[in-house]
Image (cartoon, rainbow, N blue to C red; front, side, top):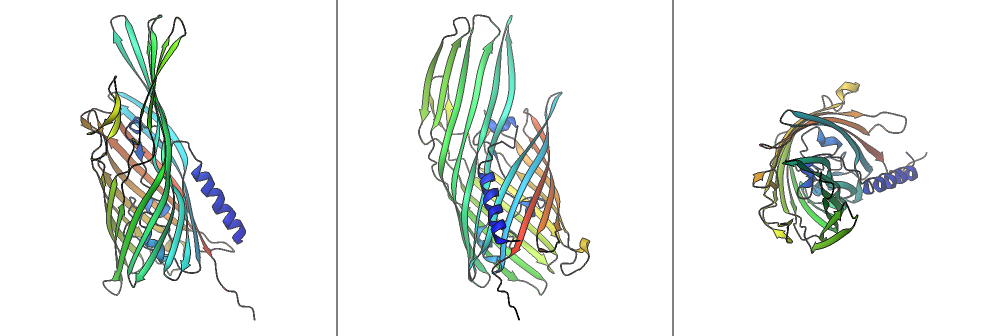
Length: 425
């Protein structure tokens, strides 16, 4: 592919991803905390349960462990883009509802900068917020209907580098511009003709940074088995964003309204994060990997309005734990038949909630995934991969709404041969 076209494509998808503000969720659970956290997996590992910390290859952009960037070779330019569509069933008691959503998911790119030094850039989601539902309470002959609605989310645009400083040992870092906003509206409307409508509008606009570090060690343990161990750490810190609350009291008979405004400075914070994982590749064909992720949310306060004050309170967040395991099998990497070169993937993951609903834990998340990596062959490229994966995700918490989501992700990894010197006789 002509390099100018490739650069134009890269610029276009990065811009599209950075400006895609449509939420990819309609979950009522996205109203809590910073929303529904994105798993930040990509086409190559989404079918493997999202495992990443111990994966290392010159044919992927593994942004979850920046140490892996040093694996890219000197002739390769990688661009990985993905889109997601999903159908979700919400069930509470004997009531059930289905919804459909879709969104441009991520865009990442990587290439070799110096010997044993690779770099990557990209735009990925951090969390999503999007929901609308009603609750009606009846008292005697009157009723009050409360509508909960919100939209927004948080994203990060990152630049990263990885360096293999000794044989088998690599380190790396991602520095991200972290931004996002949300608006959460709660109007309470009474059935009485002369009553007032009280509307609360919660909002914020965040602009800060995010820093993630990574390391990998790779070693042959037998002639056919390659072991990779990875570790990552994310540095928690205060975000530059105020939590704003506007309360509007509107009288239905006189059409007059009054407002009260509250604000909490620097109300949001990123948690410290630690991830460890390992993979073993047998005969360049079968890869088995597992990850563990810990996010320390418990020491972070959250802005809460108690009908008189809007202030920071503890006990809203709790530490989050996630485990994941996955398998990737390519029957014969040196084969000539199409089915021998397809990647077949399976994975599973389980995550505990990072917030509480009142005094109860939020929903835990169970995910089962499967996918394919399909090689693309044409006149100018035989190294690109079309990644297709399916996920079943179950979010459940005692006495709350149960969610079952079927999700399809389509990712395309452009693997371009760049920087080659042509020799003409």
